[in-house]
Picture (cartoon, rainbow, N blue to C red):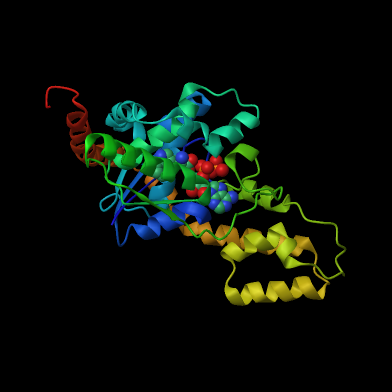
Length: 323
Ligand code: ADP
Ligand code: TRP
């Protein structure tokens, strides 16, 4: 199956991104033809500083490689290294009704948060559709928040095929069964835009500070506590073994346990869980030119596929001299 997904390099990737998406992307590469990319064109819609965009992009590449993405098997590239996708975006824009984009909740949410939208933000789902359709993707593994964008891509492909004849493959979404929503240190959904994240590869000192700052209620040590209402327990679920989790659950319910003890154990487990990946990332970061090499070869492989689809679309629409 041709599987495709992208992530935005708008900040450092956090453990919510890992447990919610990156880990599943990496598993899926074993039995599928996987295409993964770092969506730097999409990140531009929030106007990041150029140096930050560049460094977050390279960080995300290193993160994926350290976490087990195999660049020999999986096609892995930086979105802007395949500029054909922007041409397809324009071609698709011309079959995309305004109403379809006006209904997109992620756009409406951002506007209601007071963000003054640029045209790129409005057209974001068309670029995402181009990402998906240019690689003839069959399955797009994403978090539930992206479901509507995959439906938009399907809708655009369908309209295109109706107007110009069978040209584009209709993709299906594949909503990742994430370990529910990973809470941030303040108890809201962990998100780059809330400043409540625990980075996958932050320094041990920074992880410690964040874990110790996780918001808990003020139930006294001796009283019984409800684990299902506790942010620390929600994070323990991600990294503790089943047996150990059972023990913590009992400690919560029996009383006599302070949240500090749970936080301390969570810290140990988090550091333990990510230690091998941290080591691998440090090794990869030292290999001069490695990331650039991976990106160059990924872009070549991705472009070879993208050019064929773009050509098909241009011909279908009567654009260019290959008609
Ligand atoms: P952020 O909200 O931090 O900006 P993105 O929107 O870039 O994250 O999400 C990238 C991927 O990670 C998406 O597939 C999303 O569903 C997943 N993801 C992000 N935050 C969480 C979370 N707190 N819990 C579970 N999955 C998450
Ligand atoms: N919009 C996606 C997100 O914020 C990232 C993305 C861009 C994407 N292009 C894509 C995901 C294509 C899947 C397929 O998470």
